[in-house]
Image (cartoon, rainbow, N blue to C red; front, side):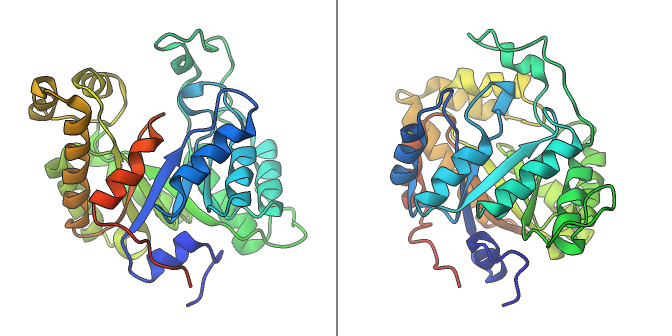
Length: 314
């Protein structure tokens, strides 16, 4: 099997296995044990582990540092990198540093607006300056340049290529939905090897978007993993439907959670149904699970979904 970066995630996907990635949120502090404890709790349930980059614009331990801590524990990270906080010089410097540390999977994202950090109970940093020197599609292209051509974005050479397995995000149900598959195509053309979607709750609508991606041949050029955020309450679903771009939650699901005597148990059941629906959907090559500060739920979910044991990498 020829590989671009030789990561376990790359090997599993190319072998035709249904891949599993899960999200590991770094702490809002410098305690390495907070990451190490999560790593030991989640070991073996996924092929790779996403490490967020100041998700929702809230300051957390850096994705690079947390990814290295996962590596040291034997877990393969997917280092997320957002365009919100750095210009192209800083991002390329961080990418080269991450590569030197052994980090091979990178997910290229735009990043939540800085005002998102002031949501909920946090003060956040609503006065911070967004950067967005380049967008997420350009970032995919920059990483591809470092890997495939051994050049920086400006054209200067680097000493040797940086082997990355390049990821991108897709928000298929954000308006205007007709445009979304074409934005996905741009990311694929820029060099996205794999794609993780925004959280999916409306399987019918997502199935329509996936059919478009299949018809355009995109699923032959990249590996698409469907995203699922474990719902824990009806209020959580209402918030995501109302406030998170591209998350569409059917009323029937919200009502189901509202009527549940044990909402958390019901949320896990809904998660399992969504995973099953995604596994049966043409073109979907894996699932990306997020439990948002409830990572302890993930081992039970992955086991109940019949996704264990995970295949061995080549």
